[in-house]
Image 1: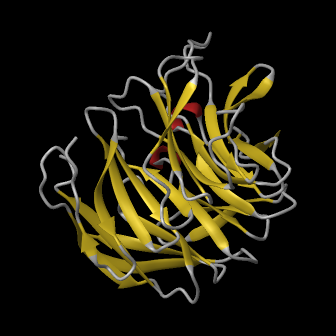
Image 2: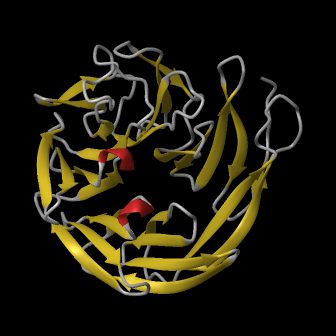
Length: 334
């Protein structure tokens, strides 16, 4: 099966009624034998990891437009849903989660040699999502599971991993986890560092923000009185806060909607804004650009759309790529 990378041409401006194209960068055969569920570039965009239903992860060395297979990582006994690179200050570490209920962490050391260094087996069902916390807090991994729990793994000085189980509040299962950036708006902590926060999306149609305190992890359910999502929340993504004066979270759902949640001040309410009228298919993934000003949305009709907020606060679609590689560009006056 193959994979493609795209760049949004001219997508930085949405005020002009010019055509916006998604420009193909490179397409290559991943050599996976089944569906690909995730593809993640590392911090420097020099390595690519792909996760597949064939129970493997493939790691590629990236040199310009040349992708060279460097390793095939095994160990999972079911489809691999996601993978996540740790910050390079901790070395070359790759976490993965699977339908088999396990989370594996592999390390590359020396270069070209991959070794599994930790196997996390706390969960009773599929682990659907993994994400590393901001590196400023240390080596911490969050795992969201279909058993309705989140586990937080923290690396210790003696090279062991401390496991914190967190009940997501959803007996139906948790689908996604995303960490708040260290620069997110927050009340000042005694240590000087803002408290750890993450957001989850679950099968009870809810989005929850979790904050760590001395008492443990405390949840806030967004839109609790009248949850705007009417079906499973498939993915959540906390936006990088570079130049943003508010906390921003994107969530997407089986109900074909994408919501942008905004918190203007620490402890304030989270206000949802719908990205557009319902999409043509369930929405599976949302992902922010590194600066947090561009949102990629992947839906079940094999399309990836890119969105940018205009000066009037509305979200405009700036690019559209379909499964066959056809490109459509559209800019709307903001």
